Image 1 (cartoon, rainbow, N blue to C red):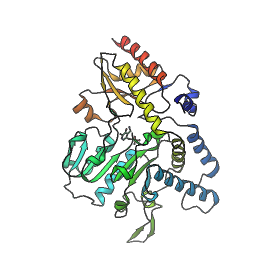
Image 2: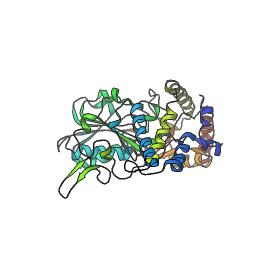
Image 3: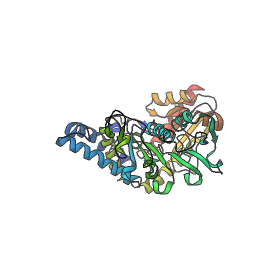
Image 4: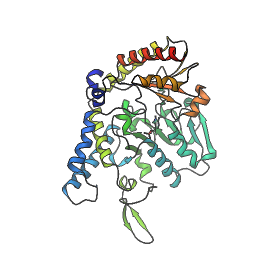
Length: 381
Ligand code: PMP
């Protein structure tokens, strides 16, 4: 399917025909299928899961558990390894809690954090292992360490890190930007924890996934306690349910899970080999145009197929450019993209504006961006 045809699956583009949406690393737009699944869930089967005794509750439970299988299938995992969370940030926080409270590493363990880590990856771990953190470039780790935090795809430069090249007792992989390119196969990545969000893969906000390797999950106890996760509680003791349900305390985001299932259905119709080739071509088109501006510094990994390109103008602030573009219905993101350390230590600019591509973007989006970018530079010069 061409990007133009694909665009017709996204009601937001029908409602806003002039919208040029190039902020896909922040969140992607939602196809009709996902929107309908949310509406249908609330219309047809809205009930709490796992403890209802009526037909709609059974249906809700079945649909919820079916999505667990779909996700498992999508990333080549086992359904019992899939924990629903509220998003990547939540998944990474829970990972840090599981590792720390289950003493999976020793108190004085060292943690390697890549410079390109999103704050969601680094900060939860800094809380527990404050004095043992060292920052490094992705290819700089050559000796074994205790915990490696790894950014699968950088949300600033699109750089891909192969976790197999890193030697660590425990590896935590942030897949926020790789999941929607279908780059996540847990049998190939050789890691222990994986986090991602539904809203960056054409699904709803407020729902995400934490995958934990069964070897580890089977040895741990949950860290978020509450209703729905215990078999038996008395005044002195408690028994948890089996994983993964023991890790989903309280009423989960049932509608979100259903919407995520619809996003997976949508993605399963995409030819990813073709799509990534198209993204490489579109990224090259974008870079060729941007390189004509001598006033711009461009930060992207040219070798990565992922269309994430951050840009700084030598004189004009990234926020001014993004605001100008935004006033013409062109959406990009400005700032440090929750990667302040990368900006300060490596890119050496306080802020960039970021263009990030998704499967509905095409050359006409880039042409409009470039046209208005030229205008913006003239306006602020
Ligand atoms: N990691 C990376 C690489 C990201 O791009 C993002 C979102 N910008 C996050 C983590 C956090 O994702 P969320 O806000 O969905 O929790």
